[in-house]
Length: 216
Image (cartoon, rainbow, N blue to C red; front, side, top):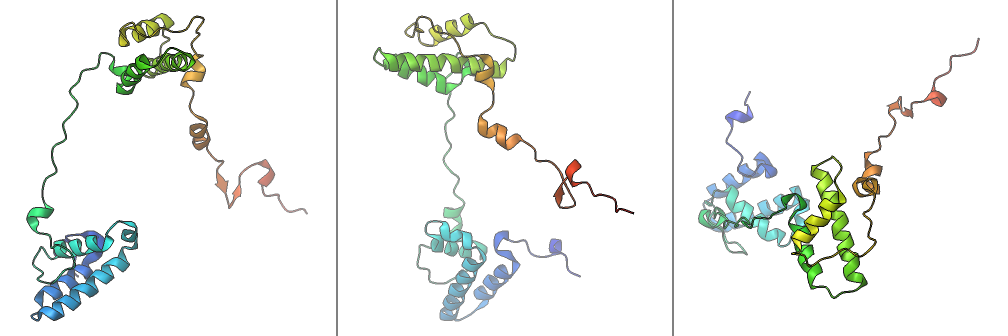
């Protein structure tokens, strides 16, 4: 008996061992025209085994690239696309710089800081007042996310004033939304979190579905 651990490692496991054996056979062929025909046939089979790749742009190009990768770039055939090499395939991506800006109120998040900047640029009017009240309620919601204890409204007002540099003022008579409305989950979340009653014997369990004993 031969175990998979004793076999040659699969280069791209998604295509299976038979494809890898077919590629090895194509490499062993002496005639180049015969290798070309064999390579085209292998690509067709690879496409049939992975139909989801048809939704990917240039899926044929991807299949040919995978063919050369499986052959460990030893397959000498003509390709309708640029033939990849080990150097081009294994190129490391460029390092993405991590944002280093330090935010004073991290528990409110970066987005709130950007919203405050946009609100400052708004012209005075109902839209700006609506945006400011939305930001204030969101500040309170974010605060309660990290601190479940109650928070004084004056604390949120002071933080908004600090974030905006004193440029955003809440309208007169403003009242924060109730804590329950701010922190309650969305309707969709509540619907998905509801558990269905357990099944028993293909039917919903319950008093109405209990099997009655036969009458004498």
